[in-house]
Length: 168
Image (cartoon, rainbow, N blue to C red; front, side, top):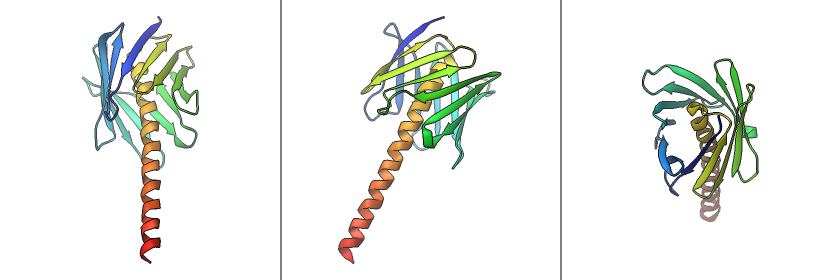
């Protein structure tokens, strides 16, 4: 079944709002300080918990029962991820250097294409699996946040070096 959704996100917000034919159908909300998120799409609730330091992963739980549904393993150096859902394996990959398009492709023929421009975007999918639709959005957000954090850290280090150079 083909699925077409759109999403919006305010500039400094951690929240995505999803629409089906301009009708609200879900959301994805990232927590501010923790590496957790919650989402809903078409009435199905999910909870995302990211852990690890060097080798990070996200465990996705059913929002109602708390049952573990899938694990997302990240490859930070190549900005890729692997989702294992039962006997299915899906691969996340950015399609452009600007990270404004990406996709999930699965061993079972699943293909979900995502695109974005500024603070909104589209999802075109060969499946209506709500878990997969939200997971692709979460993974892209994870990589963008990681890159933003590295940039901020590098800027802080540069500022400290400049200050120490001036003072000493």
